[in-house]
Length: 227
Ligand SMILES: Nc1ncnc2c1ncn2[C@@H]1O[C@H](COP(=O)(O)OP(=O)(O)O)[C@@H](O)[C@H]1O
Ligand SMILES: [Mg+2]
Image 1 (tube, rainbow, N blue to C red):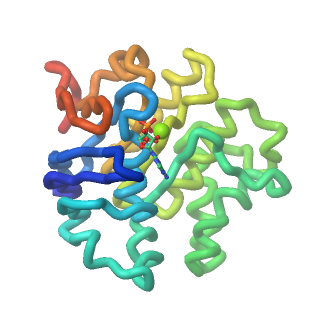
Image 2 (image 1 turned 60 degrees about the horizontal axis):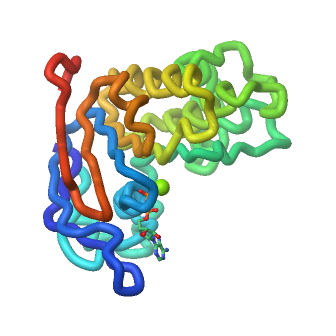
């Protein structure tokens, strides 16, 4: 198992952003989190990334209770994570190679490993050979792919994506969601938050549905592949 939520609540200024959320996610599983704006999707991902702490309840990730992780241990915990955002947050003055190499350099990977891993990550997202392209030379969809390459280059155990298709037209959005599903083959657990229910239904994967901070559904399409 990779994630356990047990009666997790997060309260902001007297309002519940999340209330009594409980679910399990297996290692290597792919899960969508959906719901309208304000439903609590981003809050759920922030709790997993330890950007926020729950008001009550238990969260375990890979057998570790997040409440036991101190501020000093945050960097160690986050090294297992890959994060993808709606606004790709690329460095606009660095080329594709350097953007993807950034987390490896921060982690102190040797240059030989960087030279091997960066092209492999770019190829995995369909950007093979684009190492020297600047972000401005890439299309919106390609920029989002570059952000995904940067998130997976350290082979995270848990990949968290918050509205990764929020800025894309419908056709590109489907391609990016399908890319996330295909990444699963490495055993990475993937959680993707999106308010776009019609898009998610096309991908046919396990989906946790939130409404006003409450979990109202957790469904697995009958002929979903894997997990
Ligand atoms: N830092 C914060 N301070 C106060 N309220 C917040 C904060 N973050 C989120 N909220 C509130 O929590 C609820 C859930 O927000 P969020 O998790 O961002 O929802 P979603 O990502 O599904 O749109 C909303 O009512 C939002 O206004
Ligand atoms: Mg959100």
